[in-house]
Length: 171
Image 1 (cartoon, rainbow, N blue to C red):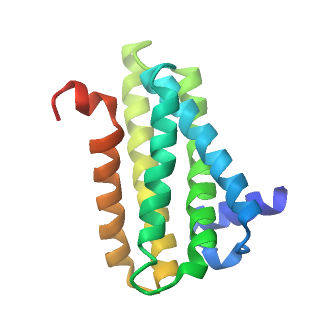
Image 2 (image 1 turned 90 degrees about the vertical axis):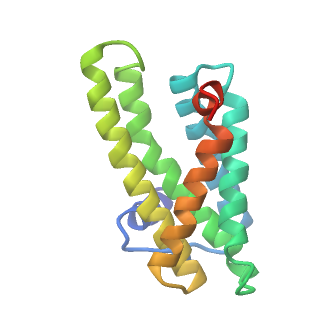
């Protein structure tokens, strides 16, 4: 297990990529489970327990779909398990500091903590986008700028489809 954590940490630090993971459905299942659990925890801490299950499953489905569809034009289907494992595992690991911060400083608890949460959220979002773009770029064998465009489309879709606040505000 520590070996996989090192690989995912290496992916987060741009020292490794999807090629460093086996094309294994077992690794993919573990990465998907870790992603689902961290997504669920974050959704519960931010939006409440009632919305968390549907948000976590929707997030997993959207992340899996976008990561897989990127590989279709180049007919790189054999890279799908590695790419999905890299995205899901790295993003799950990246979610842990935010979950810990949300447990220490719940959303809406005190005014002083909202600035800290906002800054950490922004940094996490930027890091997440860069990591996802790097993984997609490596998997597609395409320039990073193209992968960043795909990643921005993914984040936009995620916000529009999965953020309960965007639906409550009419957006």
